[in-house]
Length: 402
Image 1 (tube, rainbow, N blue to C red):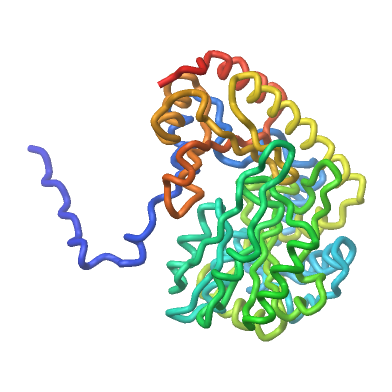
Image 2 (cartoon, helix red, strand yellow):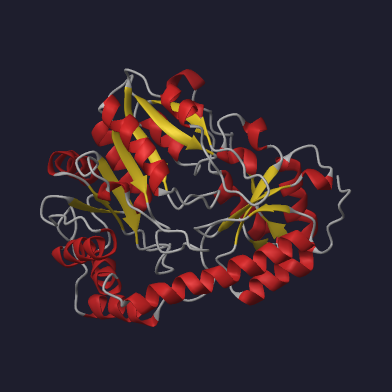
C-alpha cells in the first residue's frame, strides 16, 4: 500500500516574503543542463582548474589541522590580506580589525549587509537588469526595491543609465543603493563620471551604497574598475563586497567579505555571526595566500578572459545572436529577436533540450519579466574546448526558429 502523500502546509502559514520571489533561474538552468547533457553556459562557474598555489595552500592548512572555527568575522591572516590588496588596487586604507567581515561567500556578505542596514519600510535602489539575488535580498531584509533601468547599447555604445531616472528613484525612504560593477549580467563597467553621479545622489539622500565588486579583475578594452569607496565622500557610506570565487576560480569554496566603516561593520558582524558563524577556516588561510599573488596573475587572468570573450562573441554572432559586447565580468547578454521564439523562456528551453546548450533567460534579470523577454545570457568562463563544443551545437540553430 502506498503511503499517504504528506500534507502541504496551508499557504497562509508560510512566509509572505518567500512568496514574492521564485527559486533561482540560474541554478535551475544548471539542473536542466545536467538532465539533458547540455553544455552549461548558464551558471557562472569556471570548468577549468583553480590555481595550483591556492589548492596547495588549502591542502596544507587542512594538514596543519586548521579545521576548527576561525574568529567569527574572519581569520586575521585573510583580513590582513584583504586590507592589503584593497589598498594596493583601490587606494583606501582599511582597518582589518574593525572594518572587514569574512562571510560564506559574497552572497552571504550581501545578505548580512542588507540585514544590518535595512529597517521595514526602507527602500533599496537597484539597477536592472540585475543579478537575480538582489531582489530577494531586498525583500528578505524587509525593504522595497526601486528599479532603475540600464538601457541596452546602441551600435558601438555601452549600457547606460539616465541620471534623471536614477534621481527619481531616490526618496525619503531610500536607505541603500546596490551597485554591481563590473556588472552581471550586462558586463557594464561603471565610469568615474557615472560613479560621481551616483555618489552625489547618495550623499544628498544620506544613504549607503553596497557595491558588489566580485569581477573587479575582469575588465577589457581599456575599461577601469573603480571602487566607489575610493571616491571623495564615499568612504563612510560604502560597503564593498567581494570574494575569492571568481578571481581564483573557486566558486564552491564560499569565502567572501564585506569592507565597511566600523559602525556598519559591527552590525554586519552580528548578523553574520547568527546567520552562518563563520566561513571555512582552512579555505580562509588559502585565500590569504591567493590575495597576495603578484600583479602578473591578474594581468594574465584579464587577458585569458578577454580571449574567451572574443571567442564567444564570434560563436554567438555566427549563430545569429545580436550580442551586447561586455566591458567586464564574464557574461554576454544577447538579443534573440532573430530566432522567432515567443519569449526568452521558450527559447532557453529549446536551447537546452534540443540544441544542447544551457543559457539564462533574460527575464530573470528584470522585475518585469517582459522587459527581458528578448534576451538571454551566456557565461564564457569555460575552457576553449567547452566553448567550441557549444559553438558546434549552436550552429544547429536556424534564424527562423520557434
